[in-house]
Image 1: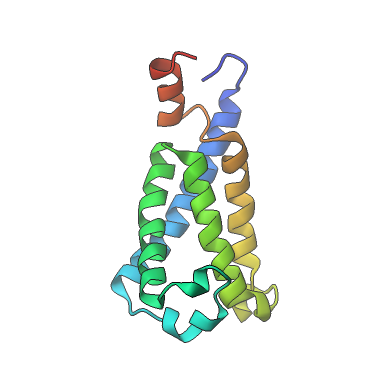
Image 2 (image 1 turned 90 degrees about the vertical axis):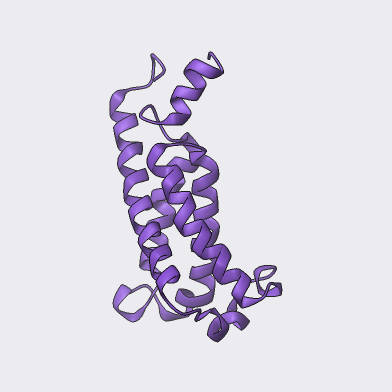
Length: 143
């Protein structure tokens, strides 16, 4: 950790990373084990995502939800991982949840909003002191 960065900040970012990683990895596992239902909502995907075949969108979403959480857990390329998961969340919000209102019970956008709020500090601040990103910066880049 940087001398001026507090361990509390690092711990807070670690908690956000672990929460987001668990939530997205679980969703990725559901896609891996399940059937592709993206064909049913493909016409609701935003541009340019809508230009891609639903099977490719399914594979990309599944890959992002399985690989990027692993990077978040170890804190490697955390900003890029957060951005990728924010894009997945945005597509889900627009395609599935936006028209259903806020309430989770109505399949609304509440959880998508929570995920974006959780990922936003990681996008802005990085993984924090308890991460491989911090070790790379300290020992490899010598900063």
